[in-house]
Image (tube, rainbow, N blue to C red; front, side, top):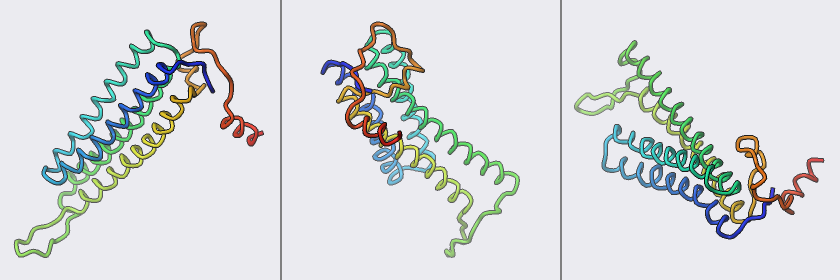
Length: 194
């Protein structure tokens, strides 16, 4: 739905999406790559911790924006915050996968190991490698989806568009931005659906 907004409101509505995307790019792309190159596997836990702190900032700022800014700007902060929840949920799934593996490994130690064929006779724990890769895939899919959604939301914010379903979460009042109507790109979707 298109809303009557000022250029300043459009700029402010883009801000949470930019924060979210910068978080994803810096922590998950650059941070993870650097840690994998020079750090240990345990230091990879810094990536979701830092990302969760940024999402926590988005949540706190959203609460403030809902009280002190226009409905349109607040709706975009809410959208960014909800995408952060998707990312947090993917972290929880990944942590659960690793915890289940660790429990199985504790009960049946060494059951998923393979000889490295080295002169030292070391072994690779295949269960750990496989579990970590699958956990990473869960997070990667969540990042991919939310990154794409956020890119679309930046476009929408710049054109005065917001998801009208946000009104169920954050009801519009008499001071909310007036609705202009459905845009040409949205009317095509509605006419195809009917």
